[in-house]
Image 1 (cartoon, rainbow, N blue to C red):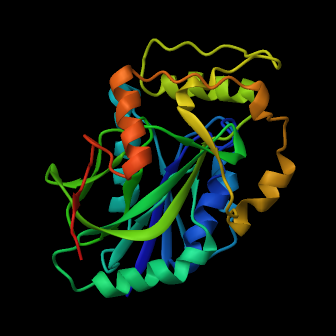
Image 2: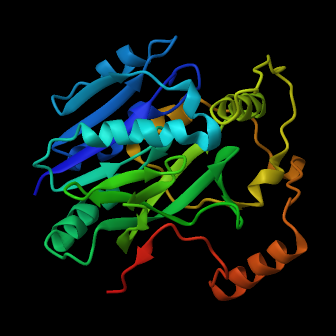
Length: 292
């Protein structure tokens, strides 16, 4: 069984993406790893080249400014990386520049790939998610945050990244997937308040041609309403990101932060039902779940 990892990245240093941690978190179970590096004004290319592994395959790309609507450029760059994977690979393991997988899951993930390799009903593997927010100690939880997403697909299939690289589809149909008991840690919203504001502005520039970047004061206050609710995380973080956690510390006192929900009354009721029953009514699913 041959496994290929793949991802895309641009301006990783400017935007403080943990791309090295993302790649190295799954590199041990990959036989090759394709990184589509977009032309950047910082030293992102050199950063990726610093990964000491013969598995790394870099392709240099140019992001199309005409594909900003809806974040389509993210999907286009994902597709470029996928298409550069060796055709003899069995599985393609996708990870974004602000995600990590805990090393405890790697043997299990590899086992699941081996088990599903010759099962034609299964086209991909579905992961659970932890969305860290504001701090490495808290997870955001609400209907706005996707609970699950496809991160492993069979290489031989004609998969394409969907919308803003949310997931994958085959000829615009949903992929048949098996849910596995492994988590992706999403760290994109773990930053000091002023950097979270910068992230929002930078992120918007990839969706909106009229977005304007501006300097954010060091003491700027961030509205945490987007989090929904913050739940303390009691597990452990992947080993690859622990140095980053120790290096990047800031004061995050939940008692001093007002997390005001931006949900409608209907959304709040549905969230409450989920908390009580574990059932998320009307949840959007960009996949077709195969029950085993």
